Length: 83
Image 1 (cartoon, helix red, strand yellow):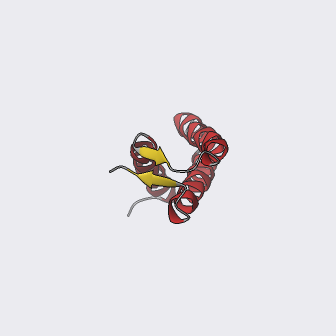
Image 2 (cartoon, one colour):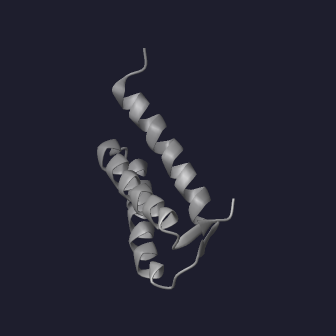
């Protein structure tokens, strides 16, 4: 049986890879989204940093907040995924 720590590590790694792929391929439809993209990138970088330090709880929190911002911008049409 997989431990909680191993499961969390696998999940965070998967989400970091998914968000990284999306960040590399988004198109800003609205110039206002650039300020939010700065926050998204900050949370993404935080997630990678915490993950590299094996701080999985903070990595998980940062990547989930990052993904929430991205998802909202996509749903309201401020950015588009080019993938």
